[in-house]
Image (cartoon, rainbow, N blue to C red; front, side, top):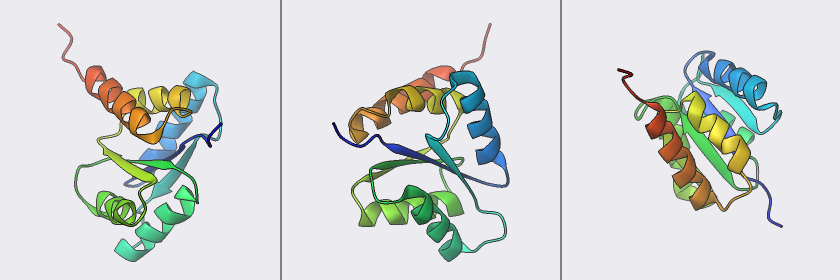
Length: 125
């Protein structure tokens, strides 16, 4: 069996911590997601923080915005290492889907979480 995909949530401020806390409380699954903040760092330091959180195995890096320092750093790492996939616009639905499907191959996990995150964005009415 292959190693489960590691989830890294890279956001501005304390957003990553809050999203992970909510996902863990809802799912009951601890340790599948690692928070990274860009607080008080330059592009080089945010890239190092994400690289340290990713480790050596397959990883999915969720970023809060489809632009900015978190995405640039994560995309730079993903270009150098094909075992990293980046997904932008992270939301709670994505993270919940991720923790329950991280045993799938990386490309399948990415498709799953992207679809879940997109489906969760609605205007009720």
